[in-house]
Image 1 (cartoon, one colour):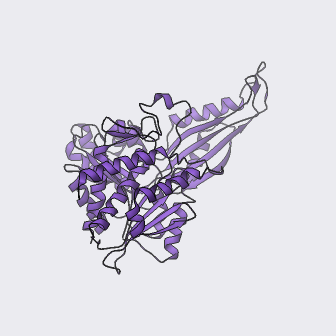
Image 2: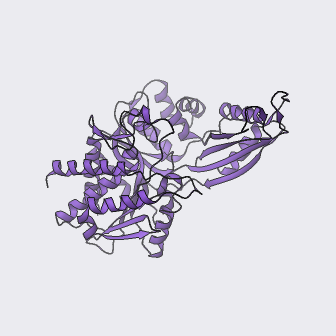
Image 3: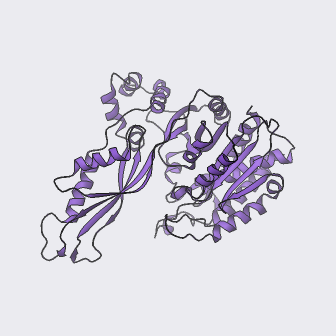
Length: 448
């Protein structure tokens, strides 16, 4: 097979996929499903061979499931996840993009646009990999399933949850589930001069809390002390000044041991003597937002509401707090912590959403060892390490059909590329798209 032609086709297909605005809506709002219908039609037109030879099922209208039959029907199959919904662009940010966010522009060695890295490239790469098996008349050892959700960015309750329940109803258990998550990161830690391939063996939980302070409102010309907005503001400052207490989970301990040989000075001592120097280690890790999020539950205010008029003191002021919950903590722990930070006046709490932290998948398994081996082939020189996925993924929905659930996005990225996800100038390099196709092909071909 001409790999250059294959990559060129993949580039064009990803560009077209980005141009279809499959934007997730907030829960409770009725989405415009026309772009999702258009995307499904696009997949059929872009990959007619796959749609002719793969078994395919639609779950809850827009959840997409595909199956490539393997040789060993008694072996538990493999499952690869993806999602084709994307987050919207921030209002007024379009002019800040190098190329329009839904243009799918191919330039400067990248494919640009919303969904390029999160997560449409993964769908394109998986179809390219399976098309190779079909056209070369090769059959993998095990059945291979693809499952693509359509609401991952807003919780996955209509997509991934329904697909996982569908698999369970069919009595299908998977030997390995692979979803987006960790990446091969070039600048994960200071002093680390080699890329670290981080594999999420679990993910933090997520809760949205609405905290509301009530106080007599009135005219802003005669403000009274202790308004609802002042009370809320004091709490938000206190939350930033007093984070949740830190603790180390097993995956992060393993990660620190992996990076220890590459660092020097006090960091080396911290990583080599975790239990002995734990307070100093926590202080050091808390300095960097990413490592800080690895060792504690976090609280981030995201939506504030008060008065609708400039000259009116509101009777209520509220904030939605997005909590990312580390294994070992619960949403009740978050509420207790926030309550302790309040003064005499306590707010009302409303739990808008609560997804507990996932369980951890083991690393002493065939599935994880195979993943390590494939990473070493596609990303030579990278050190593979388990970690905790800080963001939510569809993977957590599939714990009812597998114990071996791993989160790894097969790309090697810089901080700039990583930070562009959900942000301005999201993009994926052409090199990484090619890597992903080769990675999935290698993973499927050699899994026994």
